[in-house]
Amino acid sequence: EAQVTQNPRYLITVTGKKLTVTCSQNMNHEYMSWYRQDPGLGLRQIYYSMNVEVTDKGDVPEGYKVSRKEKRNFPLILESPSPNQTSLYFCASTPLGGGTYNEQFFGPGTRLTVL
Amino acid sequence: GQQLNQSPQSMFIQEGEDVSMNCTSSSIFNTWLWYKQDPGEGPVLLIALYKAGELTSNGRLTAQFGITRKDSFLNISASIPSDVGIYFCAGPLNTGNQFYFGTGTSLTVIP
Image (tube, rainbow over all chains, first blue to last red; front, side, top):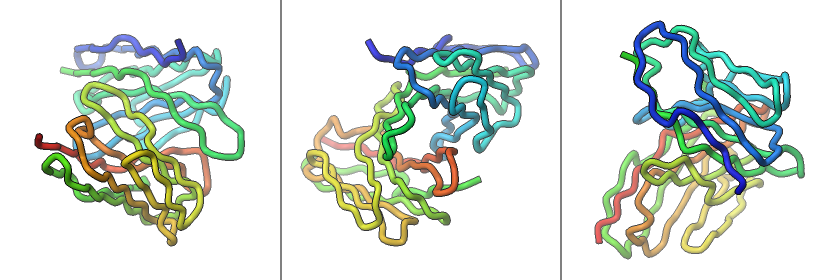
């Protein structure tokens, strides 16, 4: 089954404790992206990657890191989480090319609480 | 960063009524997308628009790409309870690969 998976789905942690949220897709998509969703603000892009070893900042990259060592995986790293990073996080992937925009497929989301 | 403003922010309607919502931007978009998010799920693409003035339908949904390329509209006809959710406009800016979502319109359909 074609899908984007995220782990964990729920996480409660404390300020300053490094964490990683994993994202994996099995559709061989080039483009992968991380978003955070907060009430009244919609989804905001944190980082995106056009392909392996190519990553770029989105709208709200501060406090986050990413890596793209393999095409299928795009982990989101919070080196020192703070309470303002409490949010719902989504990973997404999409194929590139074809001349028109291609649909982004979203993972199930990770709800993070930083105390 | 770029802001896509959606209105209304929320809607409460009776089943069977038609719904209209819109999305505006201060920048030009060359693609407009409309997504729906069900509770506890990630967004799912409903309609994609690629040309200014384009009008596209998907069942009871109709979306339009504004001629200024700075706005888009979504209409839902004869609403049903499963239309409940949050609707987002979205798209890449004309100049790059960064992707933006609107602030969302929350729809509640009263049976």
